[in-house]
Image (cartoon, rainbow, N blue to C red; front, top):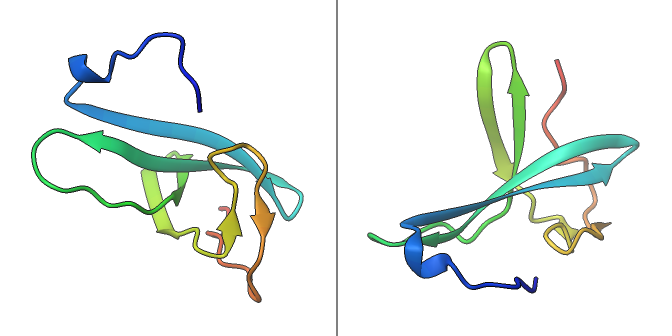
Length: 84
């Protein structure tokens, strides 16, 4: 992803939120791009926002291209969270 201005040096943490389509539904993905203090997780996970709050699902390791905006399913089972 190309940004017109690099402002990452101003932020302690950079979180990327992304929409993607899978199995006929619009889903949300979350990933930590930068964390100043300590290590961070390199996975992309599905995120759900509902009345009960925010739920973070398992890593989307059976998808490729989620952050590019062109996800391709390469797995054998449906690894996504169930919708309420």
